[in-house]
Amino acid sequence: MTDLSTNIGRLRLDNPVLTASGTFGYAEEFADFYDLNRLGGVVTKTVTLEPRPGNKPPRICETPAGMINSIGLPNAGVEQFIAQKWPFLQQLKTAVIVNVAGKTPDDFVRAVEKLEVLQGIAAYELNYSCPNVKEGGLSFSSNARIAEQVTALVRAVTQRPLITKLTPNVTSISEIGRACEGAGADAVSAINTLVGMAIDIHTRKPRIASITGGLSGPAIRPVALAKVYELVKALTIPVIGIGGIMTAEDALEFILAGAAAVQIGTANFMNPVAALQVVEGLQRHCEEENILRLMELRGAVQVG
Amino acid sequence: MSKSVIQVPVVEIREVAEGIFRLTISAPEWSRTARAGQFVNIQIPQRNDLLWRRPFSVHSVDPVRGTLDILFAVAGRGSAALSEHKAGDSLNVLGLLGNCFTWTADLQEIIIAAGGLGIAPFILLLQQLENWPGKKTLFLGFRSSRQACCMQQLGALGAEMVLTTEDGSLGHRGLITTPLDDYLASLDKNGKRMLFLCGPTPMMRAVRELTQKYDIPAQVTVENRMACGFGACVGCPVELAQPREDGQTYMLACKDGPVFPLQEIVFND
Ligand SMILES: Cc1cc2nc3c(=O)[nH]c(=O)nc-3n(C[C@H](O)[C@H](O)[C@H](O)COP(=O)(O)OP(=O)(O)OC[C@H]3O[C@@H](n4cnc5c(N)ncnc54)[C@H](O)[C@@H]3O)c2cc1C
Ligand SMILES: Cc1cc2nc3c(=O)[nH]c(=O)nc-3n(C[C@H](O)[C@H](O)[C@H](O)COP(=O)(O)O)c2cc1C
Ligand code: FES
View 1 (cartoon, each protein chain N blue to C red):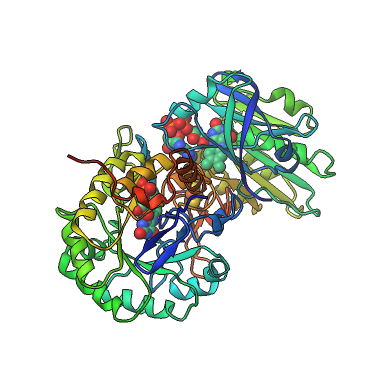
View 2 (cartoon, helix red, strand yellow; view 1 turned 90 degrees about the vertical axis):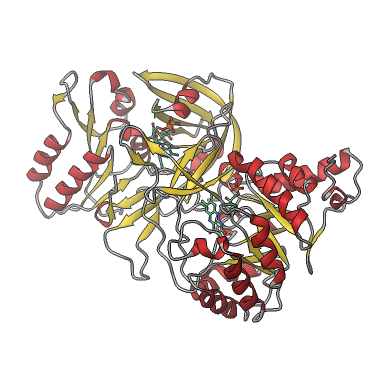
């Protein structure tokens, strides 16, 4: 039996396959399709302190081997999350990571404080990087000093593992990563979506209402892989790889680049069983290649 | 009813009108459980650049053969690729998705208004209504006789039908909303009726005005862009005319719909 387990700081996962925030709902949406406990863990849709209605439609458009979204983090707020979504998540045996965002540093702290009362949250993922929230979402992730400040403030109110999610829309992602590491983050996850745009030539309008949005899917995979590789070299804390992963082969690329775990995003829409198939594919790969521990491959890319 | 992904053979595919295809797949379970308004989401094979599945209403079912039909127009790259499939080819289909048209036993009449491909879900609806005692009246409009389809099926399903084409090549000449307006005006005000609607946006707007004018409750099925089809991406919002009690201003076309009360939603484009 191959050992697929991995560690994100103090958090041990049975396997390195997580679902990416905003692409897996609150997990319940996928319960019809397979046993969610076979995943390494699930990451919830972003939760904010106050309810958010989300952006005006159209919120999504399809692009070559990808899609652009500007959803706007709609959610019913942390209190409704606890009342409506947590009961289902709580009974899962797999790791449940709650993704949190805020308009101000204080919003992050207060949302996490409210979540602290729940038993069984495996970790928090702080979303510094959603490019859609005009009120400053971008500045958390594109300014190392603010990223450091928010991480430190949240670190002060929780013992739970903290993952900070990074945007690729910056000059130096490793500079932001180092700031988070310095402020006490246990891991970073990368990447969030790339800023993208598409225009309908007949109506001459942008294809999504917010003009630009976040590009995801296979189209961004090589960019994501390069960013993950850069972060792995720059940091000592684990890096969770995200971006266009559709299959176990794609996940293996990220693990070889040094990722301790991966998140499956857009693939969940195309194929609701994609994340499970990645787990099964990793298992099969290890058996075929006589690999006893999957994490032997972590960072094993042969360079130079 | 739980959702699932099935890999199934194409049983038959036929061009039933210009650029309009009826595709039959083998789906024994769904052929018994599908309700009018629900849809399936089909992966387009051999087109890795097309990431999304393509959603299509369940058009009709044959529980004896265990098959399910969709009726689709070639509207772009995905539907064009789908139209080139042959019997025996395999398709990856996600279903059954969405809610369905609903009615109560005390209705005396169901009025259906369909524009073009908007007829798609109503064959299944009429199949469901086969032994229903009330009156069924169908208002069906096409651009021209070249796009007209489903005539044979409709003949067997026991609805009174008013047919229009914009160029007059079949049925009455003009838009379907004209005879619909006349008909609704002729009805006695006390009867319990429900109107079901599917068609292009301008038609939906016009029919909404009529149902307001004559105070007839109506349900409409919407066709928003969909990345997932089952509530995971939150990309298919339908704006509500009035916020709900919990303050929510959007519903999801794929999960809360695609069928909505006509007066409760806003058409954005
Ligand atoms: C619930 C639902 C039921 C539907 N039922 C039917 C049906 O019974 N018969 C039928 O012919 N069509 C139906 N449609 C519309 C059908 O899904 C689109 O025509 C099809 O997706 C177009 O794909 P394409 O690749 O051919 O076009 P593209 O080249 O992708 O684009 C052509 C046009 O189709 C629109 N479109 C593209 N993808 C989608 C999508 N995923 N959802 C909605 N619109 C899209 C685009 O905005 C564009 O205007 C339905 C749509 C929905 C949401
Ligand atoms: C429709 C959609 C919604 C998303 N919502 C969120 C979100 O709420 N919070 C977040 O941190 N990331 C969100 N993301 C970003 C994904 O988690 C992921 O970082 C990104 O899509 C890249 O991975 P992928 O190519 O595998 O999708 C969203 C992505 C998509 C496509
Ligand atoms: S299409 Fe994804 S939520 Fe409706």
